[in-house]
Length: 265
Image (cartoon, rainbow, N blue to C red; front, side, top):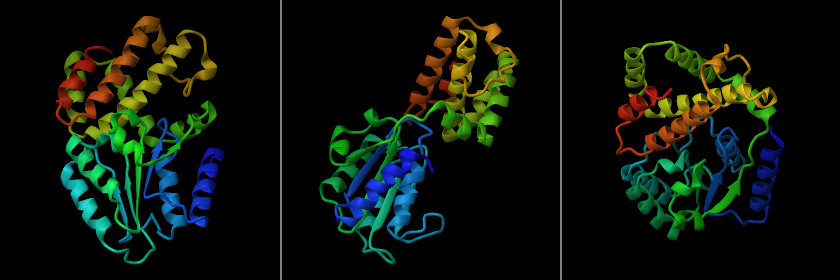
């Protein structure tokens, strides 16, 4: 486990020992910083095995969190713990909450159920209501080092698959690109994760282009940098980041977002 994780876990352990557990935590920081992993470890410290079904643990990890999901969560948190001392709820990608869901959650934060702990996880805290942030104890996760990112990303099968996909897309005509956009748009969560790796891909291509290979995560880019100018690479990275932000909005057509992106790369 990373040193930064151990420090956070040690802090959480001390809060338990001093009986100063907060009713709500906000785990925020860049992607690939182990926020979800630490949240599960916190649940484990509190006596809940997060890797098996447990009646006192609720995890919400879906592309869009609707008000119905929050209402069900509130109901479950209102029940007395079945096997543990606490009811624990983890909302991964908390920025995915709709406005209605956020407002419903805010009411719970104002009057939290007894023996309940809520953990919000996000890489985009600015997307949360300021009042939700202010009613939570914020735990900051630092940005990982290049070596840490390499270890985690290069061993991820999803990364390897995403890179193969983008190499195929770059060598395909427009019809095949649009068909690809249509296919991944069916699963917004998967599409968002793919675009995350595309940012890493083009970031590496940019570093290769400007001669900063030491900052690259993966140096096997098949001379892709020869096809793009520095300005174009920067533009592509910004457009992919913008597409990811748009995909977080459930009211926006994900297929259209991805099709427009295919026209830009």
